[in-house]
Amino acid sequence: MTPFQQSQRGEGKVGCILTFLVIAVVCAVAFKVAPIYYANMELLDKADLVATMGSRVPAEQVESEVRAKAKELDIPEALKPGAIKVTKVVTGESGVCKIVLNYKRKVDLYGFTTIEIKQDKVIEKTIYTNF
Image (cartoon, rainbow, N blue to C red; front, top):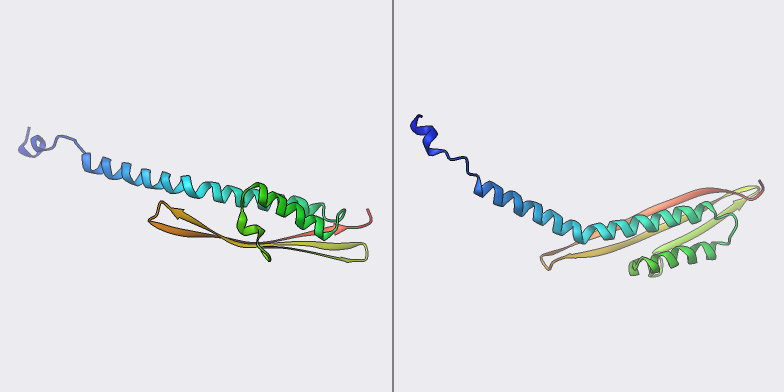
């Protein structure tokens, strides 16, 4: 063996510890942020479903269904005035049901920092009054 090969033992303790720390930080952030994203996407799916059935119910009922889902998912920012707007415009035999979701949620990352997740989506579905 050469002297160079004898000094290398194949140990990578520093690299292993740093990799473990990076993975731990990513998992900790994902633990806090993933439920927020999931709840936002579930509210968006519900709004899309309700907008599809918008021809059968008035705009107030559409808004109340979306707000009920936001309350169920524990999204208090979506319950504030102006966070959810529903408009229905019917002209002749067709129209548009438009739902606007516009709110921000703050996530505290273990006291180190906070991040803001913004939900700014517009859902427009064509509604038909006479099939």
